[in-house]
Length: 158
Image 1 (cartoon, rainbow, N blue to C red):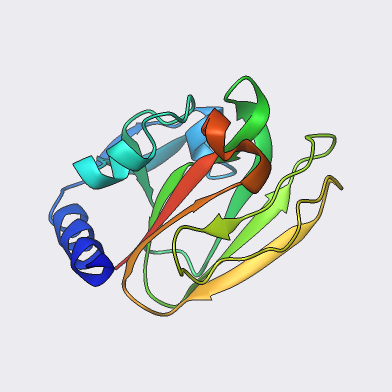
Image 2 (image 1 turned 135 degrees about the vertical axis):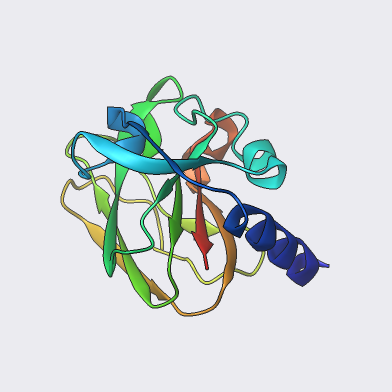
């Protein structure tokens, strides 16, 4: 059942065309002043619906070999957000999650049986967790202590 949903989401997102928009601090990460985005499909939007810093778009980073997601950025009632929240990457891309200084206890854990598990929550700024995505699919993840607040993210691999 999960494989069907992953294939379905990936196919839907891959069929969307991107457009250039201004990236805000919560979606753009360190990508500069603008980023290419595409609207998120309903399955991704539904998963991220309670994340206050999700604007309905997926940041397209398919031409990057490495992407950084900040952990513990402003959102969800405090420093309880990932930035960017939703990213589309190419197979073989390494994603590094980097903890923001003084942001509280956080971690990165996959939904269901996904590949992401940074371990127990940590608070130390500068902590990093890396994963290279080789399989096409959609990878939803969350922070164990703050999932109920909306601290979630999605990586879409094409």
